[in-house]
Image (cartoon, rainbow, N blue to C red):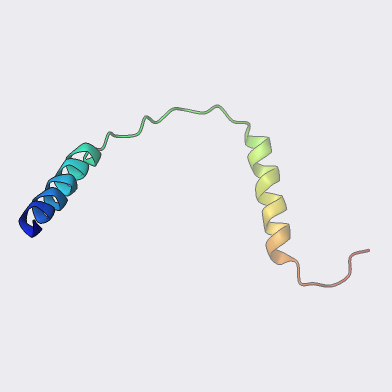
Amino acid sequence: MIFIFLLLAVSTFLIGFLCGYKKEKKPIVRNIEHNDYDLLMLQKEYENFLNYDGTEQQ
């Protein structure tokens, strides 16, 4: 009885492992067109956020 239970547990583990095992595929890299002005504005906004010291704005 115990032997059957251990055999069942090992076999289900191996079946699950083999079903879940996949070779990893390389991700597809696509060129995304972007506007340099938008990137500069986002960078300026982020720098402003990082430089904020907590004083009240006017």
